[in-house]
Length: 112
Length: 113
Image (cartoon, rainbow over all chains, first blue to last red; front, side, top):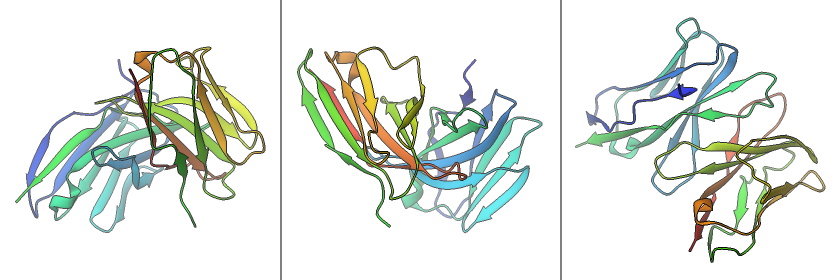
């Protein structure tokens, strides 16, 4: 079983719609959770971090964390074509030097 | 505040050659990480430094790989006797305690022929 799982997609949403990206993780001691955006051929760019159960909002982005279900999600409101990219979920566990364990990423396509 | 920088951005080499990559972290960041990413996969952890001390290495890091951070600032990653399977994007990231947020550099794309 992979440590961090994401649906590889592609997830296709029309412009202006809400994109919902999901991630599950297997290590119950995971403490910190991150969403990175990666454009083709580029390096990961931090979008959101979340540490506590519940929702965290930053502009058009909302991260949701449920530690009991070992589930973290990212909602993108008013999706734009420029949001088309691969979204990587990353998890770190305290006491493990904070190294990140990544999922394989979900490719998002925002269509006109 | 300049971001993480990596050099070179691209490297093409022949199998069996040695290559060295450099990473300059964000100024005053005390933690520096190396990851490797292949097509269609997420980045995989290779090794981690806190200041000049290399505190963890992945089992992915074979004996052909070595990393240093001699003065706690920039870091180098060397691959000896490269193999075609080493072809990947090598990513460097940095963070500053107590934050766990890691910021990535642009990466070095390695192609081994």
